[in-house]
Image 1: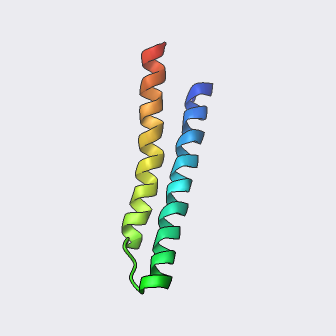
Image 2: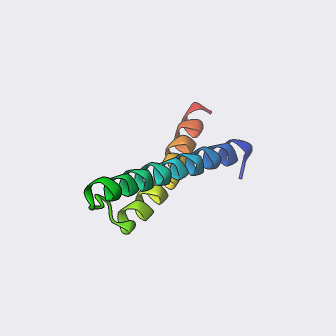
Length: 67
């Protein structure tokens, strides 16, 4: 991997991690106040992965386009 690809992967994983944190926070808060979870664990899992790999893919395409 080139340096730009490594940097793009780091950005993607950080964004995916924040998506995990946000969705888990919403799920937990909703569970406390309303006794209902709006997101299933499957949706939380796949959304974090899709954000990480999707953002990595998009950033790599943009960096190739600019070069």
